[in-house]
Structure formats: C-alpha cells, structure tokens
Amino acid sequence: MGLLRLRGAQSRGIDVKRAIDRHLQAWRADRGRKPLLIRGARQVGKTFTARALGATFDELVEVNFERTPALARAFEKDLDPRRIVRDLRLLTRHRIEPGRSLLFLDEIQDAPRAIQALRYFFEEVPELHVVAAGSLIDFALEATGAPVGRVHSLYMYPLSFVEFLSAAGDEALAEALGAVRDIGPPVHDLLLERLGIYLAIGGMPEAVSSWVSHGDLPRCRRVLTGLAENYRNDFAKYARRHEVKYVDLLFGEAASMQGRRFVFAHVPGEYRARELAPALGLLEKAGVFHRVIQSPGSGCPLRAGARPDRFKVVGLDVGLTQALLELDTAELVLDAATAITHRGAIAEAFVGQELVAYSSPWARRELFYWHRETRGSSAEVDYLVEDNGKVIPVEVKSGGRGRLTSMRLFLEKNRGLSPFGIRFSPHPFSIVDDLQSWPLYAVAGLSTDTP
Image (cartoon, rainbow, N blue to C red; front, side, top):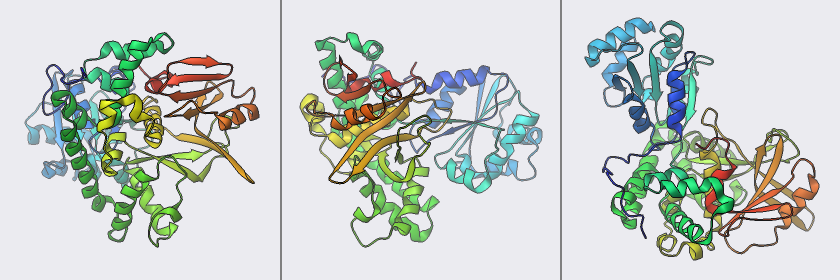
C-alpha cells in the first residue's frame, strides 16, 4: 500500500508540522500578544505542539499541574506575576527570562488560580511568552471566568487529512490538493486509497503515529479503544454524579446518530430530553462532538435565524467514532473506493471534521445545515459554508452521483446569494452548470486557512 512507515517515527509521537504551528509562530512574533490558551479535546496534540513551540526558544519551562500539583502553590498567595515567576524559578530550578523562555502551564484546569493569573501576566509582564493548555479547560473557564480581553485562544483538533499525508511522508500528495482540478486518474486513485486509510484510523495523533510506525490496523484499533476509555474516565471529572450515566449513554448513542437530525426521543430507553440535553452539552464542551445547527441559509452570518434546538452531531474523529461503534474498518484500507460507498454517515462526518480542522483556529468553528419540511416531502443539504458573503451548499455523496434534488432546490431558492453548490463524492473533479463535484479527499480546498 505504500503508507506503512514514517522515517524517524518514534513511539511517543510523530514528527509532523501542524497547521497550527504557523499561528503559534505568528503569536510569538506579535508585540501585542497576550498569554495563549491552547484549547481542544483530550489527546489531540496540545502538549506536543506547545513543546514544539518551546523548542524554538532558548528555554522551555514546563509546569504540569496534574503531574506536580505542588507547583500550584506558586499562585496561591496572590496573583502578582513577578512574584509568581520568581517562585517558579525556585521550584522548577529553571531560569524564566522574558524573550528567551517559554513558560508552558499544562493541565491548567487543575490550577484555577493560574487561569486567573493570566490576565496579570498580560498587564504586568507582557514581554514574557506564556502558553497554557488543558483537556478540560473549558469547564475550568466556566467556573473561574475567562480573563476576557487578556488572553488569546487557539483551538486544536485531530490531524486533518492534509496533516495526515504530511505525517506519512506524502507531502507531494498533500501539495497536489492545492490544484484539485488538475488531478489525473492515477493520482486520484492514490489519494482515494490514502483517504480510505485515514477514514479507517482517523486523525488522533497516537493512532496516526501507530499507523505510520507499524502499518498495523488492529494495533490502531487498540489505540482508539484506549482513547475512548480515557474519555469515559473523564466523565466523572466534569459531570455531576447523577449525570455520568447519561453522558456515558450519549457517548455511544450520539456516534450512531450521525448523519441525521438528533432527536432525544430516539435514544433507546425511557429518558427525557431534560435529562439528556445537559449530558450532550457536556460532551460538546469537552470537544467530543460538534453540533451542526439548522439554518435557513438565507444570508450571512449563517447563525442569523438558525434553530439551535434542531441539530445534528459530528464526532471529534472518524476513527474514534468507528471504534466506539465497533465497525470493521479493514475494507477501507483494502478497497477504499468500494468501502466508501457503504459509509455514507462516516463520509458526511469526515467532511464536517475537515471543515472544522481547516477553519481559523482563533475562534471555535460552528457548523450549519439546511432543512425544509413540507407536507409530504422534505429536503436537506448536509452543510452550508460562508464564502465572502455568499452561502455555498455542500452535499456529501459516498456512493453514486445521485440527483441532488435538495441541492437544486436550495440553489433555486437562493439565486444570487448562492451562485453554485458543491458535491463531495469519490469521483474526480468536474463542473456541470452551477454544480461543482469535488473528490471527497479535497475538503481542504474549501478552507481559507490551509497553509
């Protein structure tokens, strides 16, 4: 298959450039920078990325509040940043020098006072580079209050398909995605093969590292199963005791309901929406799922007139989702072109995951879809994307080309606002009138934030 081993891969991680790295370098060079929060779900690479940034400084000073809780004491007396830096120098035995050192506060959710101190680092020691991260940081921010206007946030997600190609040493294929109209049949087939592998294992860094180091699909599945268990172990950290069972239930059920409107009444068992809704909100805040909200698509921003009570869900990662559902992913590796046609919900989730991954990391990406219900019929478009004041409808077709009745209905309804629609499928690029057909692997082409 050709994608078996990454030169120099290590068991503890993969040496791959992430799209977020350039944003971190821009932050480093910005004279008006603020302390930075790297936000994202568990195990998406936040710590690895912060350490990679630290390697570009003369010194990285890493303070992990989970591993060494005693270090939180440096923030307890008061929030004077100069005293805190002095105490951290003594406790860590590292020099912390503005301009030369990166102070990295990891698992900061375990030290709420450290979160509060960030605003004073900005106000009183702005020359010191300070980065913080934590898997459950959103819950801590809710409890302590975010230092509004005093910190920047960068959002991280699993590796995108482009980043996966880079990790696998397929930089030339990644670059080919920049000219998707010119991709010929041999390269198209190769990219489809690589996409099948990505759909099978997803973009969680540990799973990708396992694949490029060993090329062993069962081994990757064990990694993903372990990650799912780690997520379950976190439930008790952010859910009240009576909520844990609902969070655990929805962790699996929401994965099985991808691709269709989420209705609490469809969850097996005698549960009420008022019991389940808070649990789903907790999973969303933990970054496990993204909500796709129904929008009329009648203008920008898409949130205008949206119906937050009508939504679908997209999992954090397609590999993790299939591990949760115990789906056999071998066919995706062995015969991607055929297997993709049988994975409509996974293909749709993949496109949502990619749209999030390629969006600007400086704000949390929101996803929208369009649905019209009339007596005797309904119409639905999988995603709506804003593009320079225009609304572009996006359909995902894992199998045959289909009639795209809903797409055409939306375009007819929104003439002028929506000049064309995009269909993602396993087929090569083509254009017919106001319909553009893009290969499924080319979602990066919709992004304004890819390198």
